[in-house]
Image 1 (cartoon, one colour):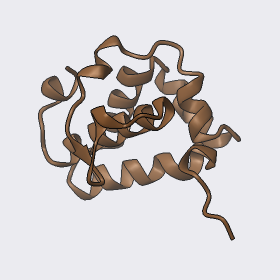
Image 2 (image 1 turned 180 degrees about the vertical axis):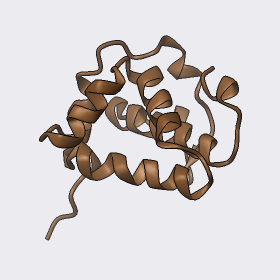
Image 3 (image 1 turned 120 degrees about the vertical axis):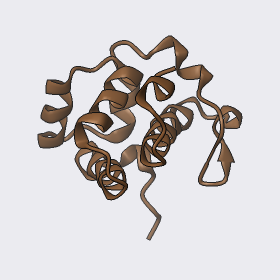
Length: 115
């Protein structure tokens, strides 16, 4: 069986994993929502609705209403890969959020995360 690509997975399956990662390190769902909204331009209410719907994780990023222009300033490694070197634009967008949640979980102050 072929492994499901992350961008074909349901948002409602992936996003709770990001929240759990942050919560294990003493951060909150609200903080994860803050970085996700900053990155994509979605409102918190939209995130909540997506958790109840059928939206794919890839479409979450493809349909982002206002991707933050400073997202390209997100640098560093996530899962052993430098975010800025990822060629596939959709995967890079996905990894931007991974990197922001990773920084959150590592205790970085919100003002530094939201470049």
